[in-house]
Length: 112
Image 1 (cartoon, rainbow, N blue to C red):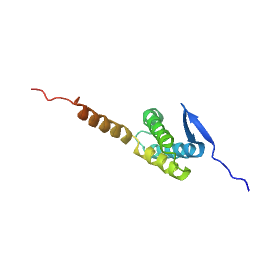
Image 2: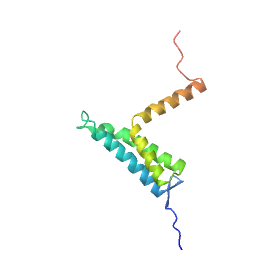
Image 3: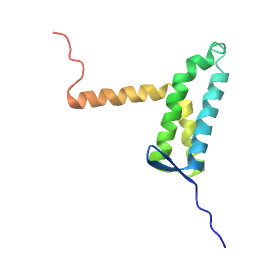
């Protein structure tokens, strides 16, 4: 009996399973397409307006796969979830930076 081993790819020296990455990116692209298709007001310029958000969500989905090494089904759900978050990814990043500033004492000081 032979056993199969997952295909391992590398990105900037970080190993990850190919199936998990493909699943996550497919889930993310599918979610972004589904959300964008429902935006009637932005339909004409949808790809131009959504390109930065979709790029960021794809990068976050890829980062999750590289860091967590999930199974393909979990990776698909992570990718879809991040794709649905969309612009929320930027808001989460902004909150994280604000917390870091507060911890380091670099927050905005009130005017006196």
